[in-house]
Every structure is written in C-alpha cells, then in structure tokens.
Amino acid sequence: MKPSTEKRLFQYALNYKKGILIGLFCLTIAVVLELAGPLIAKNVIDNHILGVEGYWQEVTENNDKQTVEYENRYYKRSDRLADTDNVIDDSNTLFQVGTAYYMIDGQAPLEGERTAEENQITITTSEETYRYEGERLSLAEIYPFFKPEQRPIIMLLVLYMSLLVIAGVFQFFKTFYLQKSANQIVKKMRNDLFDHTQRIPIDYFVDQPAGTIVARITNDTEAIRDLYERVLSIIVTSAVYMAGILAALFILDYRLAMMCMLIIPLLFGWMKAYKYFGTKYNKVIRATISQINGNINEAIQGMPIIQAFNREKKTKEEFEVLNERNYTYQKKLIKLSALTSYNLVTVIRNLTFVGFIWYYGSSSLELSSIISIGMLYAFVDYITRLFEPVTDIVNQLPLLEQARVAGGRVFELLDHDGENVNNKKVDRYRGKIKFDHISFAYNDEDYVLH
Image (spheres, one colour):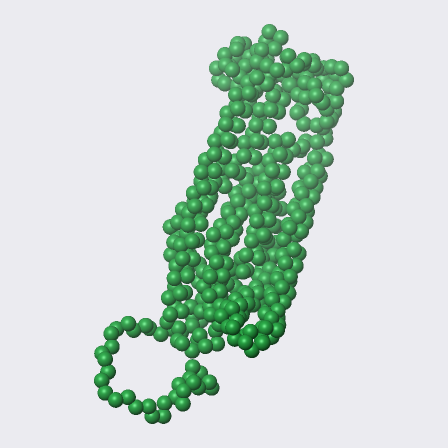
C-alpha cells in the first residue's frame, strides 16, 4: 500500500529539515517576544498607572525615589516597603472617586462602589457599606504620587520596543529559512519528475498530450511550492501563535482559557469538512486545467491543419466545454470558501466575545470580584489576537487543498513504472536484415506496422 500524499510531501520536506527547524525555532522566539506585549501593558496599567491607588504607609524619612512627600510627611506604597524603612502607625488609603483622588486615614476596602459628597466617602461592597472622612487632593498634590511611576513605565515601554525589534529580526530569519527550504524542496521535486518522464515507456505518451505533462511539471509543482512556502509557513505560524496566546490566557485566567480552547475542535472539524468538499472540486479543476493546457498546445501546433480542414468551430467547441467545466467548479470552490471563511470566523469571534462579556459581566455583579482595567485590556488584546491566526488558517484552506490535489497528480506520474535508461555503446551490427512477420503497436489495437 502506497503512503498518502500528505506523508510523501512530508518525506520530501525531511530532505531539508535543518532549514525548516531553524525557521520554526526563529518563529517560536518571535511569537514569544510579540506576545509579551499585553502582559507588559497589564503591568503598566495595573501596577504603575493605576497602582498609586492603594495603601500608603507613612515613614520617617525620604530615603529613596519611591518615597512621596505630602503635607510635610513622607509616604511610601505598602507593597514597596523595605526592611530599612521606619514605619509610623497604620497605613493610609489613596483611591479615586470619579476624576478626583482622596486620602483616608487607615485602611479602607479598595473594592466596591464608591461615591463622594464633599469629603464624605461611601464605599459599598457585597457585604457592607463603609463611610469615611477623606481629604481631596489637588492636581499639584496628587502629582508626586505618580512621579515614582514614570521611570518604571518608561523602562517597560523601552523593553517592549526592544522585544519587538528582536522579534522582527527573528521573523526575518524565519521567513528566509522557511522559503529557502520550500524552494529547495520544489527544485528537487521538479528534477525528480523531469528525470522520471525520460524513463517512462513510450506508450504512455501516445494518449497524453504534451500540455498535460507540462502542467504537472510546472503548474502542479508550483501549487506544491505555495504549500511549502506560504501555506505551511502560515499554518505553522498560526498554530504556534495560538499556542502562545492560549498559554498566556492560562496564566491570566484558566477558566477563560478553557472557554477559548473550544475553538480548536471547531477549527479541526472545519478543516475536515473543507477537505472533503475541496478535494472533490480541486481534483476536477486541476485535471481540467491540464486538459486545457493540452488542448491549447495541440491546437497551436496543429493550427495549419485545423484551418486547412475548416475545423475552427469544432476546436472552439471542445475548448469551451473544458473552459465551462473549469468555471463551474471554480464557482463551487468560491462558494465553499465564502461559506466557511470570513463569515464563520466572524460568527465564532463574536460568540467568544459574548462569552467573555457574560463571564466577567456576571462575576462583576459581586462587587468583591471586579476585574482590573489592566487585566481587562490584556484579555481583550489576547482574544482579538487569537482570531488573527484562525483567519489566516482558514484563508489558506483553498491553497492547501490545491496543493494536496496537485501533489497527488505529481506522485501519480512518479509512480508510473519506468524503464532504466541504458546509455552504453552498442557494437555495430554487421550482416543482412530481414523483416518477417514484423508488427508494431503502442497498444494492442492501433498497429502502425504490419
């Protein structure tokens, strides 16, 4: 039993596995670096832009850049206290109500619904309502609390830009090595195919127009080149990208990540359905294109005979039959792609966002479990990015099926029994030649010599 087309295409790829593995390694590094962006953005938003809101401890002296002076006193964020800091009494709470910031003596809950009337602060949680006397800070007074965050924010942004530049370098090497390997694979395949055509017995070429054989060596191998150079590159890139995004989602919230994992079986079933119908249509299309090439080749070579015997109308009708068949199946393939490409991706993406809103919308009814803005940004960013590789994979399905069918046609020609070519010099025969009961035919019916 002969191996499948997919396995034989994979075996050809193994001839240049070094370049492919280097390309995939560069791809993995580039994806990891790019996906660090939302995590860095979450850190900037939650820990630095919004991080000033929280508990601030009064200390005795200003001994580092993290210490803030307010009303001739020194304060430091509770999560940044060092062993050398001399702490005074209980911590104070700084938080935002609307566009204003307030300072409260003691620790107040940071979660819940907040309202303020002059200096009276009310915080309502799922368990209790708290009221505090707070002091509203002016713009000049709140600015020193943000100042220590400027340097970390700049450093994180510089880090993110550096990661993007490094990712761009790895993307270049990924593209270079994968496309170089793809062209090497197809170069070898074309050489093997052309060499094999010279070993195929003469009777094969009797009923095979030259154009159909040329189409297999040029058009079909070109479709396979697209498979190695574009399709597999994009599909592998998308798969690695999706794995990285799902890993990041598991880090943030495993329940939401499990919800997004449902996309994988949907995508797999989608590809199986497309393969079933796409293969049938592409087989007819590739065979018809070969017949069209053969028809055109024979018509051009035999045009003087066609014109001499007034066969123009018949030749045109034969060509139109092939052209109409190609148009019909191309239309079916376009309809299949239209039904299962952008429209279906959009529906699944919208349903995922509905699930995301329901998940966090229902949990936010409990005031103690409100999601942070940075976490929300990271989730939305990752979910948006998750559907980019899904769209890329779906868009490559037509080319993938074309390459599979083209590969089947190429291997069908390679599997045709060949004869060993003997180029040894033959001694010159001497003597008389007599023809007695000699006949010759390429098949059992059409004899050309009796």
